[in-house]
Image 1 (cartoon, rainbow, N blue to C red):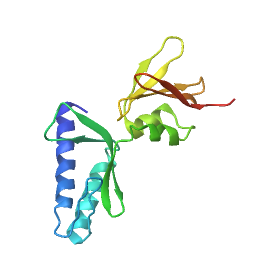
Image 2: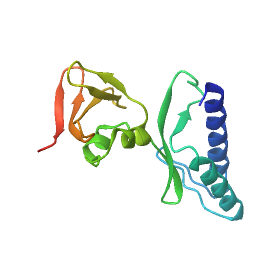
Image 3: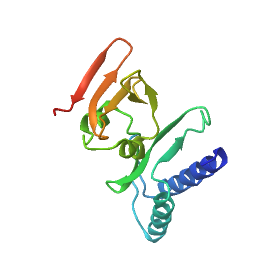
Length: 161
């Protein structure tokens, strides 16, 4: 997806979300907008579902920072509202199904970097400034997960063979 397509997708998503939260009886909070449904809402939800079905990972743009900063995540319906989940947290890796593949993780939270010599670490930058380093074994199974900060390294998972 090129830059213009990403901008169009983000604009359409933001427009739909803003239109959903602009309803008379809607409530908004910093965590998640709550949306009450009606016939117009049901149509908007249907259109959003159709659009998002082709884009499992969405981009959230803040108009004050666009295009320099963005968060990768998913917009999901939860408790009658839309919630934006970034997924790039320590908790994501702690709770991660340890049978997940590299492709599963990329589908959930986006692309990665690679570090290492001999042992290859797949690296995701987390929201809190730390990094998650994941090692896969020769069968593509998660072997180890580390959380790396400026002054520390902590192994949070090691596969027992």
